[in-house]
Image (cartoon, rainbow, N blue to C red):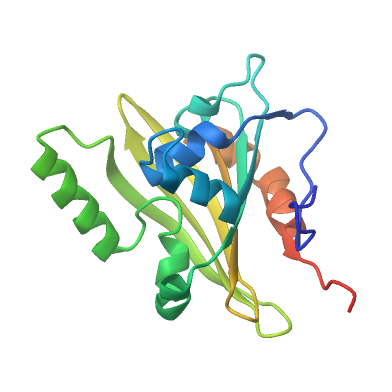
Length: 198
């Protein structure tokens, strides 16, 4: 599978069903459907979602016994390019760093709602070695979401020009992650930037 510009490549087993990832983009951004911000995000962000559940659903990213894969390529704005770092890559989808988790909790408490994500546990964190000046990080972590737990295996890569971030998130319950670790490693290793001709 390649993104629409052909810059990022990954392989997902044929047993996964591809589903519309746009609802996830609205969740991550907080944009209203049809708003100018949502339209702009759609122009700058390519995304895809794959679910191995018998009845695929985008909600399975946040809780499922079967694996779910989300991948996205973001063309960064000028201000985003100015502040991107390995910690920003860690926090690109969900709050992972202590600073980001603290900010998330503060926003939730201000809203008066209980936090959707709690009980964070970092399982591993390692740099991704790349060519052509690209850099990245692969981090595994778990969250308690509602009454269940979900484990995430996230790889995020900033290209050598600093203009795009490619991110992949593999998610399922902790026991699923333990049982299928080798399969998830293979999916994560397939996630790479492509050198385009010219």
